[in-house]
Image (cartoon, rainbow over all chains, first blue to last red):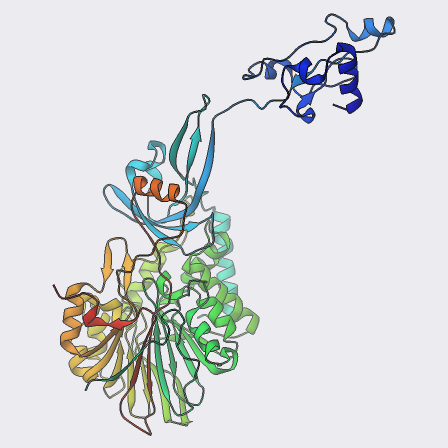
Length: 195
Length: 382
């Protein structure tokens, strides 16, 4: 919202903006504008679940843009806070990419490559209980997975520690790729005398 | 004969001191604690050989770091880089090593010669789904060969790979003692199984199975021989593994004063006949440790066995070095709740360096650098 529009909103209401909105800790850039040439950033339905904010007030209720124009009145903006919709999220503290080396009855051993900080690779043994049921059929030597450790913030704001292992559903070899590799191997073999 | 032992001047830097060996001095340096190994040999006249590769904590190839530290230019001084087999713990950093050694040859096991192996390298190094694979190292070597328009050399049982009859130390020869013909036949079948198959997922290719195709080297400098056992194991088939070498009537004569113990000191990489038929009495034996999951090599029994065969056995590091990363406490806490075990794959800070001036004395100088120690001290007496 432009500073001019803010000033106009304050002038019409006769109160400072912080009083109009009922809050003083939301920066102007977090507001969207509505009515008569001012644009909503989000559809109304999207704004409905906003919680934790009770200061929305409509100024100059009932004045449509057309009517206001006919009466040569100033168009009054309706202000909505642009507060993000709360949703569950994962805050990552540590990430690895891993490749399984060996599998035993109830665990697997993998080499994991640190994606968070530079450093030496690590070898890890993880219980298969840590693997989601849908990924169990992907457990085999050579399988690639992503491993993430961090916090899970729920919709209600609860924070829990979480370790997420997600196996990569690898694309399959195509006949064209295999044929191309064979042709290239033949060509390279002739070129460098690998025979 | 007990060798004179010099302790490390520094526990963190490779090489300890910055002096290169003299032109008439032999050096054998073995690098590698925990994961990977590499051997560097000076055969005199500033001619060097690199066998396999492992990397330092900064992920630089250990032999290159050391050579530069002692003022040797790998681009002009390294004659051959040998990849004894393509397991990840022996080829990490070997592509970078070969690229830096711009006047060197590359030597592979004859077992990798089938065209199917090149297909595997082409497919997985360019179309694979994950970095850091040993196949990628070989793919990069092939790119370097293409740029240099050079061919690789292949090692097979009883082949002379290099010879210099006029070195400062006299005649120098490098021979490969393996793989045997029977091992190569078996390897072809294994390689065929690794070739990508249509509609199969693009998993990371992992070299598995016993190390029966590894290249064992015999380096002879005048009348001094050095045996580098790679990861060769025993086989129930007498035409494969160590028995094939021991039974060979065409291998070079002589007994080696130094052995790089095969397969990290494991029982299946050892054979009493090696000690009785191919080595001098009380030879210098050097091993590198190996840790994978709950497999720790050498075991306490391995150390006892090796120590009973020579009083001069050394390890580049103990196999039980566990290092933790400097991570936030909360991550460590969550890891403890999540995993059965996690350990950093230790990189090369351990080095056993052996030097000898054959024209001056008959005793090798042994320097234990970084985590290196005598094999008999790995497991304290209980």
